[in-house]
Image 1 (cartoon, rainbow, N blue to C red):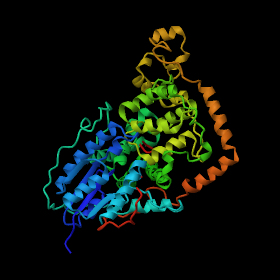
Image 2: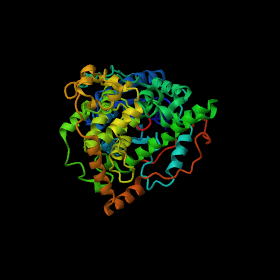
Image 3: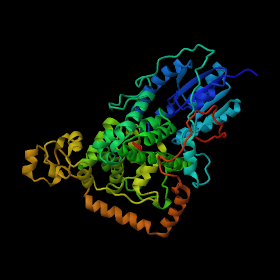
Image 4: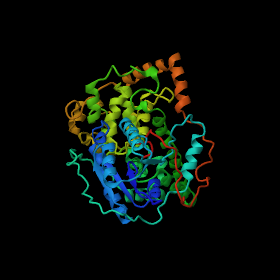
Length: 520
């Protein structure tokens, strides 16, 4: 029987290394690659022009890399099923290969529609795993061991290139303007697999030395964190590649301090998939509270003025405002400060996590739905099982920016404010304000809420709710479904993993279901 044509559908896996779908396509007569810029993505409330811009940068590099292997990359704009149908009519492919995706609601719906179309047209659609997320998981027992087995498995490496039977016209990639998107104005990380592999190398060899200490402050985290989160979100690196490279670095580095730091990073990689698994198991957490006892807690008390001030970085709390302005300008912020932003919005301002989460999703270049919505609820206290973390913005300024360098960089109105007042400028008397050229209420706003009163009101409500029998019952259900388990695994650096590539990727079971930053 002659070999048949295959189509590799790239989604959030914009790389050529450790790409199971590409490896599978090598068994076919000829193969083509496809990326679809979907209106459903562009019009979704969590999409931002910066996300599309980063993806286009990744696609430019990917197209060149694939061309070097003899595989054309088609980039089409349109909904998935019509695009796939048109290509099927034009090219007559028989196999569709892609990676699984655990994404927002629109992508789940899209994949269900694609699965139905493939069945109707006798297209063999095979999806491959690329993270530790397990589909149709019945319970979390043994999940950590399954994650470990996947991450330790051989990388999927290409053997030679492709021999295409078709010469196809490949128009230039679209631009933001041609897609109807305005320029975003953000200063983004470099896109593409080369940049991803460079970031991984520098982190494992040099930058990761102070990782455990650096990750909390927005100043030190800028360089001391891995900065791999956008690359994991867009798939320019596979989780398995990061895991295995980290384990090799831990085992081989003579620097004990670096090995210690990298063990901390290695442990967080599993948590990355742990949170994504929550969305896979319960897609509705994008829209509703984990703990149903929290329904109505904030939904009916939304203050639009407070929300606008928070989004624009003018709350009157310098650390909150500096973090929000930095995030809006760069698309990145370290995890501790992300948690503080959500905590402030949820507890001080009593804003519901859905609206604030949508705004942050657009700001985060590394928006990963499973991590994002789990963390939004975790930091808002609506999971029912996690410790309530209520951050004082003043204390965070004093602890994480003790010299005021970060605040002065991003809140220039406060440049001349003396350091003792920088975290609490409203405490300056008139003479100090005049000397600092900063009149509170004019040049910089007064705090929009009283820190202590807002915190007390939030604690009274949240802890009072958690004492109820209904809350305890909810918590038991959430823990059973989503709670972490003891892994039973040896410490990082003491595990053995395969070191040779797989000859052929294993075929997963067919499925109709599809998928910031905790580890930045």
